[in-house]
Length: 615
Image (cartoon, rainbow, N blue to C red; front, top):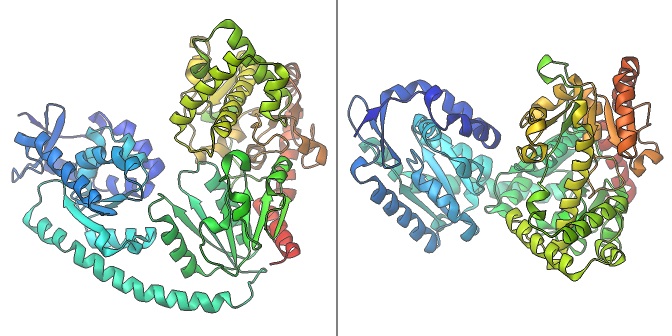
């Protein structure tokens, strides 16, 4: 067996795993990089596609290189046996190269409400794992927790407090070593169950005191002037979590205190959220796209803000209207959402404009310069419409054109008006099944799945039409690489890759023109990207929606608005030829944002609505 040293700059998977680590576990990345120099203490071996590790000085092997495949299967079998016997949280001690965890993660969808915790006292071994192995699925997985550090107790304490894992019953926790352990490591890891029990007992005392304090606090009226606002967010919500964070900062600007609990997995979610809420004992609660009762199983005497950023027909539970309570104050960004809340047992409901999710003005930088910029996602339309007859394709595109022209019309009614043949409808229904399966998102019935599929492909169709009309004008696109097949070889250079959230302000401020294309799920309202561009100091070019007729933004002063493809190209050419006009609209749009549309303005509007609706 050939042993070799490891250097990150020559490792096969580090460049792939590092951005995923930064996205999903940024605090872990910082900890691992501090241990990079320790890699020189180890040697690695490759045998039949599997890596092994040993210490240079002692020759101690962390994995049995002679029988690694059978060892890996044995540990995996033990792990699955634990889950089958009722274990809810499996602590994998010495997760090293992560052979077991990377296999186990594929079983998580089949073992609901179970999770595993990866514990490693040698951070450099995790670094080696991410350098030598493809760990995309593991890094992106829910219900996987990481406790990595030289001091296992410090790592466990931080994780258990931050993620509230002490709510898991002691009998539902088990430990399992993955790699060969040193004598000192074996002694340390044997103490984990006893440590966990002791920690839980100490937290129980704290929890009991928190409940007493919470009960006393809930019997007092809420402070709606300078109180505490509490929110629960989901780590993977790319746009919603930054929007909620920005809104919370708006409350801070008004003199409030904020407390945010971020769910990184659904594991024991209700218990963990509730314990965090009890400890905070806030004056106002904030949830997004769901009823507050989803998180709180008892009456908590506080007003709850239910912020609907997406169409409740597709992005809320089927029973949400019935789950609302008189303490819920619903605020939604699009007027078309209102029927979903008709006769719901809630405190109040009203429309409120969106706001920016970025928290600063941008700085013009050479690396982000572009004549025309678009940042956004894309789902390939052709992927779901390939291998169809000409007649079926023509009918589908007629349907998509109809959806774009009548965004508020019911899709079944539009299908009936267009007289689509049964073959076309069945083809769409079959493709919808494939789409929803790939999406891995449950819907209450097949009709809802079908409608959501039509919405999704019509949204992509809208983006295709707009983007195609501007490619020869130098449009630069940032987003997922699903754009590449659509762009084709001719316009590959227009695609610049994925853009991190923290780069958005500078990108918008650096581009001459920033394009927005409103989603069909919010057919009447301005969306967060409109305000993101203005907040960053960019020049906003966007399609017309009804909110422009309500004076929220002024076309040709705060931004430029187009009605159709010809109008869009004409206005782009006018802007290209008039730098003074570009500068004037850019400056006026940014000032209007500062004067009327910051998170502070939204927080003030929300408080006024809650007070009027009755706290």
